[in-house]
Image (cartoon, rainbow, N blue to C red; front, side, top):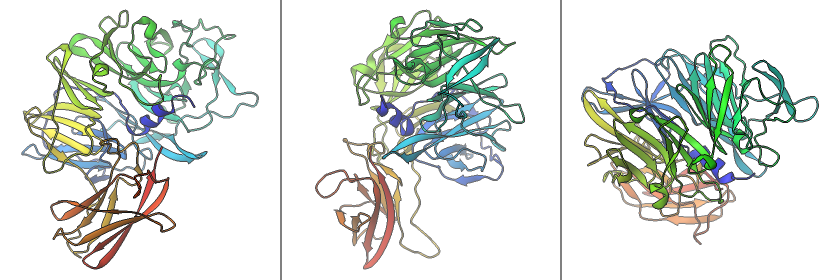
Length: 531
């Protein structure tokens, strides 16, 4: 499938919108229905946003949240409700009335791992109770590959039937009125009325690549078809990635951005389609944000022309899409932007080269942060998400990474890192145990540093001496011996880059880590996946 590198990145390195503003927190000790656990679901932090009581984190293992003690110290928790979608969280939406989260996981299909949507959950009581709906899939048509649906006053609008969850992932979600909207790549853009007892997914037409407009009740049913496959058979504009709703509905796709006007009586939508011909920086719009201070709509768009991710431009409009302007700063420094956030007239950009901010509203000058905690060095310079809040009248800046979350109380002059792992310390039994994080380990997509991915192999070793670690494949062939562990408190860690003793990436599969410590032997299993 064309542009596989983008789809693979979306599984783990996704940009998604969040609402950014100052917010004054106090220690809420909020009860989320007794379904909370201490610490993060995952160290991969893709979004930081707010609800009435907590800061919420969208992670590679589900949703987590931050509370604060009376001294404004962050406390990290995870929400594990049986009605939440399985797997990681590609999208999270929060406003004063509702929280919505989508789910995804990778499955092994036809010789490789592919992304699969696992549904959407929503809560109208700030995360205490949740409702769930399956990922939207269609019934196989009796004839052909198309289904025919009603839209507005028209019937028989032709849509490609999407009969699988594979590549059908709700990468972004938004809410307008009683409807939850989802952009699901292969599944297109769909919505459902969450106030219904048994809500039903509804497919929404977008302009084809060749169309600048698509007007409700004026669709030519003989020539129109919604088909999210590669041209010339289908339309890149039907591969929906991102969504934002204010006075209009904005949908980012593989062929630009679409501005929709929703008829609030009929819920039908008129569309205007913009792409590079209208001034956008690049075609694949994977994120849409609004900077209220200047009434700007920002499009984070990636250039899909090569089979590897490359730096790209940012685009923005100050007149609701009539004109688009390009920011080339990040393309010039070879950075990929994952997230944009706004505080007053300051902009924050989370990128493959770290976190940047503007010099006030000077869009041509972006200043880098040096994000570093000497106690817990980060393996990757990537910043996936950021946010800036007031906590008990004290300002806190946060930055999410593939390997944990940083926070600063002095605008980035100094940072503290929080990283979760399965501790190998058992105080009661005083046993020495062995653990690997992340597990499974995606070599080409996790903890990237100097063109390598890394997994941490952690063990309790109060003396920090006399340890040897070897890795074997499933046939118990020796792969590599690791040396020079580092330590933090009473635990040591070895770092492995997924390569064998000949510096070759190992194949997909299960690997066994054997630790010899003070004459005793300990084992743990590690799943390794490469692209």
